Image 1 (cartoon, rainbow, N blue to C red):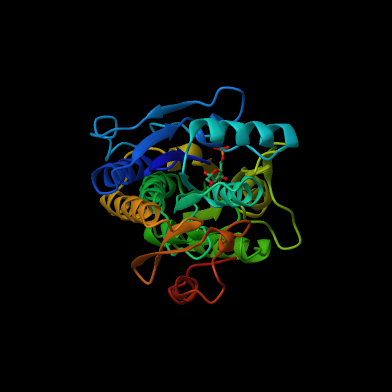
Image 2: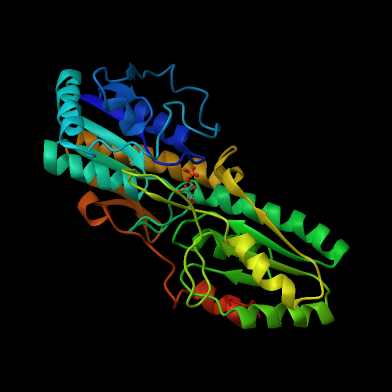
Length: 350
Ligand code: F6P
C-alpha cells in the first residue's frame, strides 16, 4: 500500500513521535510505502503536490523533538472552492495514495471527513491538540506537555506576584474549551480559574481578589482564552477568511486586567503565554501516548479500517468513526470532577 502522512492544524509536542511510530509500524509490519505530505493539506493544494518519501532513516532520532518535521498549516482549506477541490483530487490520483493518515485536531478531522465524502479519499485520523477538545477522545497528545508548560509558568508568576503583592493574570490557549486552563490552574495552584464553559461574574472575581488583598496580598488568576464575562463577548485576536478555524482568540487576560484594576488596591498585570504552550519537547507521557496512537493508526491502515480516528477512552486505545468527530468539539462538562474539586478546595471559578 502507498500511504500518505500529514500533520494539520496548529503544531504541538508529540507530532514527530506519531510520525515516527506510524511510519516505522507501516514499514516494519505493513510493508507499506510511506510518503510525507508537506504542511498539512496545504501540500496537496496547487499544481505540484509537495511530498517526500519517509523511510526508517527519515523518522529516526525524532521521538523527543517538538514541532513537526513535515510542517503544518492551520489555514489550508482544500475545500475552499470547486477549483481547489478539483486540483486536490487530481493530485491525489497522481500520487496514487491508497490512504492518508491525518494527524490533527477537529479542523483536520473535518477536512478528512469532507474529502472522504467529496473525493472518496480514504483517511485514518490521529488526535492531536494542546486544547484536548477532540470529541470522543479523553486525551489528545500534546496536552500533557502544554499543562506542564503552563503549570511551570504559573509557579514562576507566583514568585513575582507575592514579591510585588500583585494580582497576576495568566492567559492560556485552549480555544473554546477550558481543559488547559483548568488542569494547569489546579496543578499551578491558581486562586481563580476562569473557563470558556463558565461565563464569569466580574463582581465575584473582584471580591476574591479583595479578600486575598487582606490575607495573602497576592492573587493568581488563570484564564482560558475563550473565557468571557457573563453577558459579554469573546475576545477575538484575528479573523482568517476560508480557514477551517476562522476565529483566532486571544487577549481576554488584558480585558480582565482593565476590568479589575479600578476596583483593586493592588496592581494588576496580565501575561498571555501564547505559543510557548505549543513548543518544546513532549513529556514522557505524550511520547508514549503519541507512539500508541501512531502504532494504532498503522494497524487501522493495514486492516483497511478507513474513515476511523485512533482514540483513547477509559485509558484504552481504540478507534471511532471520523464522521462522529468532525465539526464538533469536546468542552469541559459542568459536572466534571475537577470543577467540583476546584470549588471544594476554594478556587474561585468566577
Ligand atoms: O488549537 C491550538 C491553538 O494553539 C489554540 O489553543 C489557539 O487558539 C490557536 O491554536 C492559535 O492559533 P495560531 O497559531 O494561528 O495563533
